[in-house]
Image 1 (tube, rainbow, N blue to C red):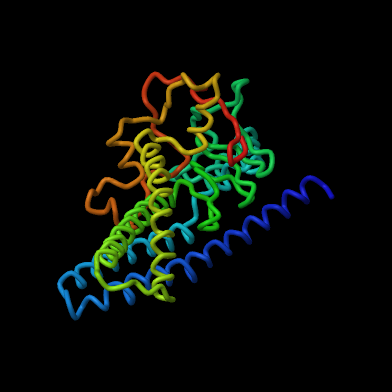
Image 2: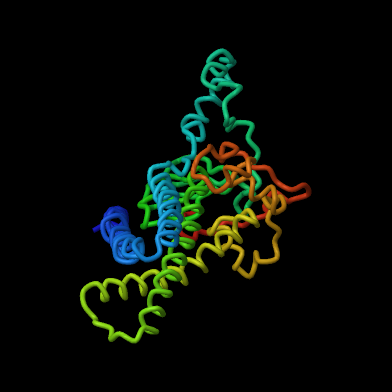
Length: 321
C-alpha cells in the first residue's frame, strides 16, 4: 500500500460518509421532526386552539422551506475552484508566447476582460521565503485564501472546511448558503424545542395520569434531539458569524492560533459592514434568502491599506498549504 493509495481510499470513504450523513438528514431527521411537530403536536390543537395551531404551522413550514433550500444549494453549489488559467503548464505556455513575440496567440488565449489574469495578478499571501504559493498536487498557482482539499482532490477558493453533512467543500461560492443553512437549522431546532417543551409542561400540569406509549416516546426522542441540536448549533453558528464579521475562514482562524502568527493583522478585514456584505450581498432584503451570486471572483481580494505581502503565514488545517 502506498501513501497516495491510502489517502485516495480514505478520501473515498469520507465521500461515502457524506452521502450517508445526507441520507440521515433527509430520510430520518427531517421526517421524524416533521411528523412529531405537525402530526403529533399541531394538528390535534386545531379543534381546541386553531389560531395557535395555524401560527405554529406557518412559522414551522417557512423555516423548514428556507432550511431545505439552503441545504440543497450548499450541497449542489460548487465552492469555487482555482481556474485552469492558474495551471503552471498554461502559464508556462503564455510566458513562451510572450517571449517569442507571439502576441496574437497570447491575446487570444488570455481575454483581457477575464476574471483572472495569472501573469499580472497580485498575491497578498506568499510562502515564508517570499515565493508564490503553489499546489504540489494540482500543479497550479494558489490565489490568496485558496487551499487544496484532499477529499475533493482540487484547490478550493477561500476554503473554509470540507463538510461531511453536505458532502461538499464550503468555500467562496457556497459559503452564504452554508451560513443560512446553519442559521435556519439553529432557529428551527430552538423553535421546535420550545414548542415541545410547552407541551411537556402542559402534560405534567394536568391531573390525568400520563401514559407512556409510542407517541410519547417519539415526542421525547424528538425533544432531546432538537434540544441537543439547538445547543450544538448555537455555538457553531455563532462561531461562523464571528468569522464572517472578521472576514476569516476557519482555516485562517486556526492558523492565527499559531503563537508565531497570533499578533499578525488580517489583511482581508474591511470592517464588519463590508465583511458582511462580501458574504451575504449588498441587498439587505436578500441577506437571509438563499438566492443570488457572491460578489467577486474568489481569486482577487480587496485588502486594507498598509498590509505586508506576507501578512499570513501558511499552514494546513483541513486543507493543504
